[in-house]
Length: 191
Image (tube, rainbow, N blue to C red; front, side, top):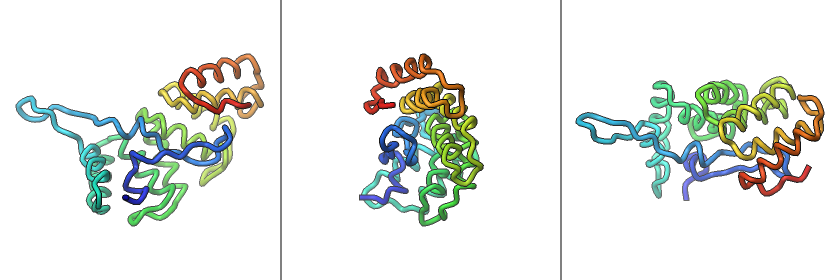
């Protein structure tokens, strides 16, 4: 089995007890290949997709994966930016754990529409990991992640409304967000 830093599409870290305790990698935003049309109308994969395919091999060469992710990031692929950010969150053979670098990359990926990056950045703001603790900014990025399609973020927005964390306390709105989280399959919607 590959180390987690190579299986970036297969690993999922979920919050414990319904609160944002750990980072988690979203299978949804990383596992969907982005096919592009190449020469003569044939489908070609992006550098990110090639990195993903290599990372899922039995004995993946980490240097090749890393180089492909760097190249995809330079081409503006937010999924690659997010994958590299997670390497800075957890460390890898080519990156040390560095929350400041990770948060900068999470912001870039979130700005490119990667829901999981917005969620992880919200956790950084909520916990003050490598960035100044700011509950209003955490709330902002949970909302952004929810609007981008992250199911768990719906619960987190509801939790923040319920307790008045980074947003005015509003039990009615919290129930709306909790209900939406449940319809999206979030199991632990305890307040």
